[in-house]
Image (cartoon, rainbow, N blue to C red; front, top):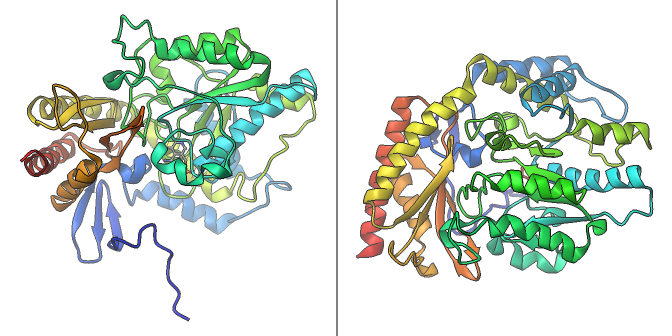
Length: 446
Ligand code: PMP
């Protein structure tokens, strides 16, 4: 029998990657690439970091697996202490899973169980309001929440559709308004939607603090998250921040919500949490929620074999220790400013760059056929795919995306290097990006 990996795509054959070092990746032919998007905003500490490798290897030598229904491990306890030490005040409980989608599902189930424990089994609080142009995972449960058209249409008969509000997409405002005179119609839509459904049926609102993969780093106006927090409080609804991409220092803050001094009830994290060294995800939970379960039924009625996996715990604890010791979040902030300055120059000069947006080392670039009208490229032109190809030919990996708002497809990509990138490396990324986009725009606009 000839065993084969079922590939993500049969159309193109991805090269085999054999080595990683810092921000660089090397394929089997010896070609080196800058990992300009940290995989998918996961390899926050770059590749081959000796401290993390040593911590995971040492854990393998102690205990590689212990079933979470029977055992605790020091690695996981330590990981919880480390994660909570960088999380907002009052969120001390961490539930560990293997990835982002599992973490989202854990958050949704926890929100439901919390209200059952608090108000009794007859509570009707269960629905989760989400947003269009968002992404929360690929499982059937998470796809009902997420609004990325491109990814969901094929599977929509399988999942339960969550109610959704529009995301803050100021460049193409869904309300055709302009900030700040809009008065944040997008945030106010949450209250209207809660009232339409009835707050007694709603358990939570979930959103990415900066939208990640669907529309390229949509960054909210300053007032957005404080307004959302206030509405959730007023209607007794939990606020779930999906920080799978934005968490763990990515945006130049420990967690992205810190930029607006907002404390969610549950933070969902994954990716940067163990920085790609071991599959990991988790939810960081407000004490009052965890303690309601503690004083009620006494257990979260949910579980996976890999909950609290010791290897994930060892990697997570080592990543957080590394971040503190090497001032990684501060570096993300400083290098983020350098990257932003360079991107703004590209925005000013490249004729197909409509907008650059982001924070820290998480930036989105939206490509348009006409900067004056903001008209997107016709889909068959494959603008973001071409930009990605031109950058790759120059040894820079970027993360292509495509959003859709009110039925219009868009082109965008993310640029999000490892948080340990140096100033010289940021300059090199900008150089390759500028050249790649120049080449792409010449082809697309000729
Ligand atoms: N939420 C967000 C914001 C994400 O970006 C992702 C992954 N891209 C997920 C959830 C799902 O995570 P995973 O792929 O680890 O299941």
